Image (cartoon, rainbow, N blue to C red; front, side, top):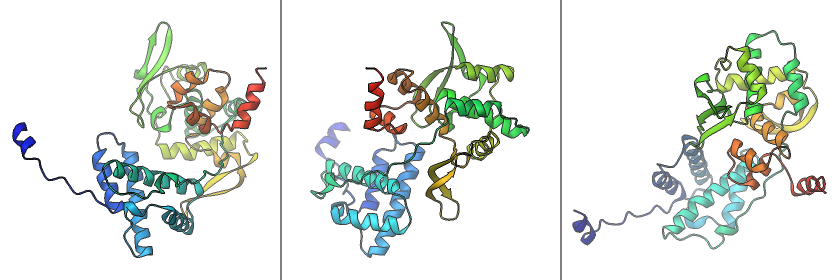
Length: 314
C-alpha cells in the first residue's frame, strides 16, 4: 500500500558515476519524451565515450568532465576526423547528461558550465526563387527525376522536413474558411501542423488529379534531386561540405552547387526565401522552430546581416 511504501521506502537506486552508464540511466529517465533519433544520437555518443576510455585506459566519470577532458575529447574527435560542429554538438550533449546528474545530487566539476566550443561557420546552401524557376523549366525526360522534381518544389514551398513531406497524401488536405490546408503530425517533434497549400503546390496537385507525386524513400529522393539540379544546370561552384562515402565524414571544399543539394534544402530554401517577406513568427510556425535565434541560425543570418536588413526599413 501507499502508506506501507511511505514508511518503508525502497532503497535509493545508486546513480551511475561513469558517463557511459549515466547515458543509459538518462535515456531511461527520459524514455517517454525521447524520439528514436535522439536515442540513436545518445547511443552514438556512448559508443564514442567507451572507445575514448579504451584509448585513455581509464573510465570516464561524470566528475571528470572538465577543461582537461574537453582537450582530450577534442583531440580524440579530431584524430577520428570529425568536424568542429560534430565535436561542439556532442560535447554539448555530454554537458546535458552531467547537468542532469548534478540535479540528481552527483558531483560534477566546477568547470562544467564553462566548457564551451565555438561552432564553425557553415555555408547554408539553399535554392533561390530564380533557381527554382530554372528547375521547374528544365527539360527532364526521366520519369523518376520528374517525380523527384515535383517533391523538391513541394518541399521548397511547404518548408517541411523530408520525414514529413514525402508522406503527404491527398487525405491530409482539408479546406477551412476557403483556405486549403495540409494537416499532419511532424515526425520529429510530434507537433500537429497545418500548412497552407501554396499555388506552386496546387499546380502539382492539379497535374496529378489532386494527388501528390508517388512516394519514394528519403535516400532515393536525396540522390535524385542532385540529378534534377544537374539537369537544371545548377553548376555554379560554391563553398560547402560533401560526404566522403569511404570515411563517412563531411569534407569542406568548393563544389558544383548540384552536388551539395540534399533533402533538407527545401526547408532551408523556404525559410530563407520568405525571410523578410513573411513575418518571422508566421514562418517559424511553418518551420517549427521554437525560437527566433534558432530560426536565424538555421537560415545563416549573422548579426551584421540582420543590421543591414534593418537599414532597408529606414
